Length: 134
Image (cartoon, rainbow, N blue to C red):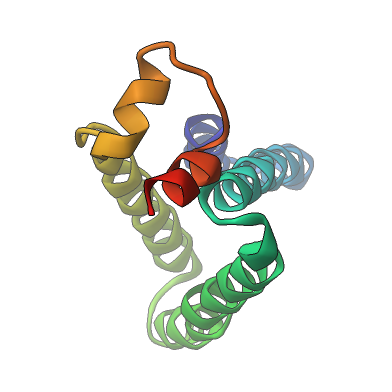
């Protein structure tokens, strides 16, 4: 979903027709928001049942703290000092960098306790395996 959203965003930058631009914008935002379900699922699977509400709450706070709060200020500053095309390009390039770093993390070897599950032993969720190891 992230790669599709990034491709839509890159194509959207060079559109001069407002209708095509907003269609590209709709596709970009839709693709980016589709990732949220997977992130929440991973968070839920990674913590014990009694800590799941707190884990989701902390996740939302961190997303707002590092995403929603500083981005309008930074993009507003860039927009005030540069052209609109430069501002949009900066936003898209920043998102591309974030996607590449996220992809790099996926290439790292998994933790020892998760290897068993990846090799076909599907005896339970990750949080059950972690709880049994204590």
